[in-house]
Image (cartoon, rainbow, N blue to C red; front, side, top):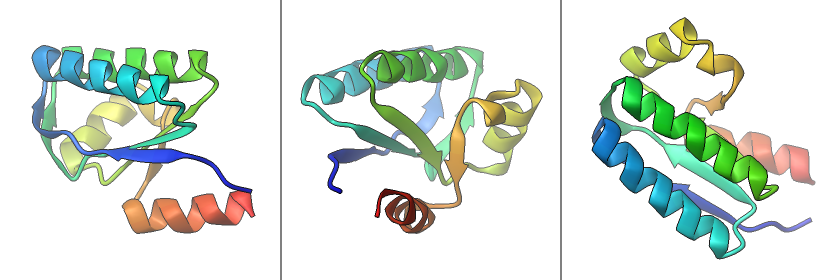
Length: 109
């Protein structure tokens, strides 16, 4: 079973401005027919509430396109924010890209 997927790697602080850029980037990716999207957050140092909001609206965009969105490589601050806001129940989080590929390939075979 084959599928199209893309990795997006935001960096720095995920705030309102960067969050809007991320949402636009995700929207463009979806227009190209991508079915699975992985946001690798290994370079994201901090997320504020507007950055978190943009991740939620990105998830809605992806769901509306019948695609899937996953997250990997989150740091302690992001993990804590996800847990406090219950986003860890909304987003499936992988340790890193290798973990994502291992688990995803196991599911799709």
